[in-house]
Amino acid sequence: MRAYRLERFGRIDGVVLGECDDPTPGPTEVVVRVHAASINRRDVMIAEQTYPLPAKPNIIPLSDGAGEVVAVGPKITRFKVGDRVTGSYFPRWLRWSACARHGGPTGMHRRWHGYRICRSR
Image 1: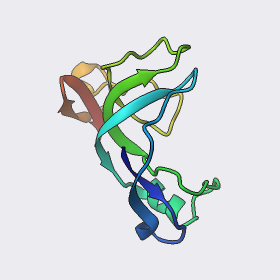
Image 2: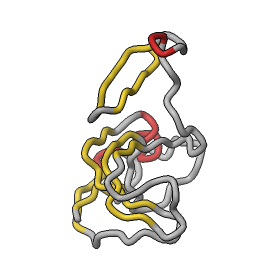
Image 3: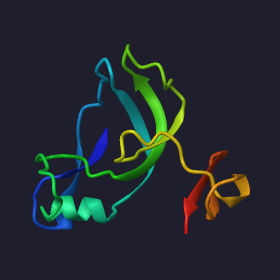
């Protein structure tokens, strides 16, 4: 598979495309085929080593991405192969908040493959 990895710290151009083996999930892991990704401010801070937590060399900088589950570990019960997912660096944030149309704070609607995503303005 192809993956972008952070090979050199200091600048965002340290993120380099390369080939690597297809991942195999551990017991509590999920493998996602990424269909959409972006570099956000957190990724830039990690590359520039200004993020509050240390980064490991050769990490895949992906704070924002979406795709489909292609493999799950044996202890995974929440996801199954074929599920469409998006990543979050807030590990306990399991649902998007509802927008005004759906009884929550004001937001704008976006659709992604049939799932309604509401984001704050």
